[in-house]
Amino acid sequence: MEETKNDLELLLSDAGDFLETKASLWKLKTVDTLVESVSTLASGVGIICMTGVFILIMSIGLALFIGDWLGKSYYGFFIIGGCYGIVCLLFYLFRDRWMKEPLSNILIRKIFK
Image (cartoon, rainbow, N blue to C red; front, top):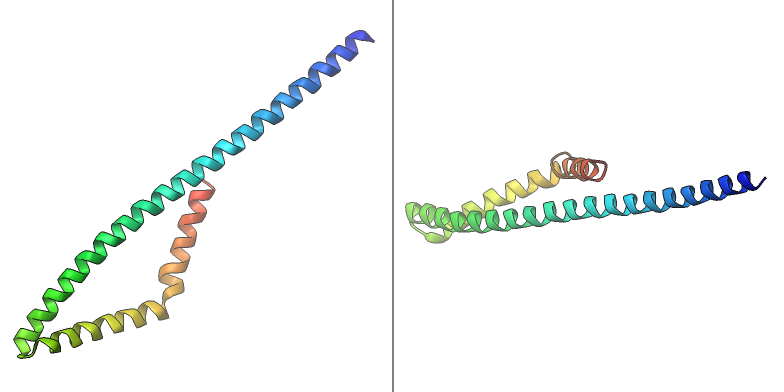
């Protein structure tokens, strides 16, 4: 009888240790997923900012070039603005296919990795 009691106490102790280890592992996996997602997001934001600055400078240069070619500098800005308007309209029309689905898939892959 005494031996059965000791075995039961040992089993309960091992089960408690298992649950603690399982909880610690879950916390570590959650932190790893969170850190990887945040670092990916941060690097993506940095790349987007640098790309935005590049596009802005190139757009100003191209608008001035087109304006000089047409005789009035503001013509170039109107043309470049119209091109950006068309691009924005296309992004708006296809936002689910071009933005929502790929970003959702990337996030799901990161979480369930």
